[in-house]
Length: 191
Image (cartoon, rainbow, N blue to C red):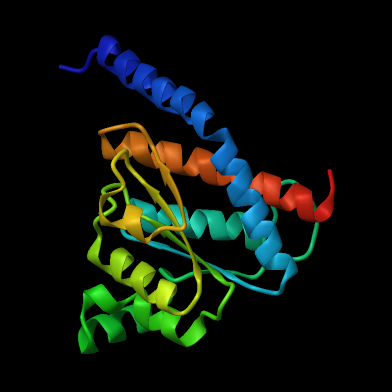
C-alpha cells in the first residue's frame, strides 16, 4: 500500500543528501575552476557513465554545449555515451569494459578532463576509462557514492555523495553538476 509517509520519507532523505552537499562547496568551486582553466587552454571535457549516470553525463554535456543561463558560445564537451554505433562496435569487438576507454584513446589529449560518473564507483568500463585517462595525462574527475569504490584512487578530483540509495546519489550528482556548470558558465562569460 502506498502511503504519504513513505513519500515524505523519500523527500526527507533527498533533502538530507542535498544538505550534506554543502560540505562539498569547496570541491565544487575547485571543479568549476578546473573546467574553466581547461576550456581557456583549449582543452575538452569528456563525460561518461552507465544507465542513469549516462543520462547525467549527457545532461551535463547538454548544459555546457547548449547553455545553462547565458547566451554564449558552445563549450568543448562530449558525452561518450551517445554514439550507438561506436558503443556497440567497441562492445562487440573489444568488450563492454572498453566502450569509454577506446573512445578516449582516440579523442583525449593531455590537459583534457575525463569525468566518470558511477554511483558505486566500481563500474568496470568507467574505471578502465579513468585508468587510460591517467596514462594520457588527462585530468580525472569522479562523481560517486560515499566510498568512491575503485574510482576514488583513480580520480585527481573526487566527489562522493553521502547516500546509500542509487536514486539519492544520482540526485546529488545532478545537483553538484548543475552547480559546477553554472559556475563554469558564469566564470567564462560573466553574469
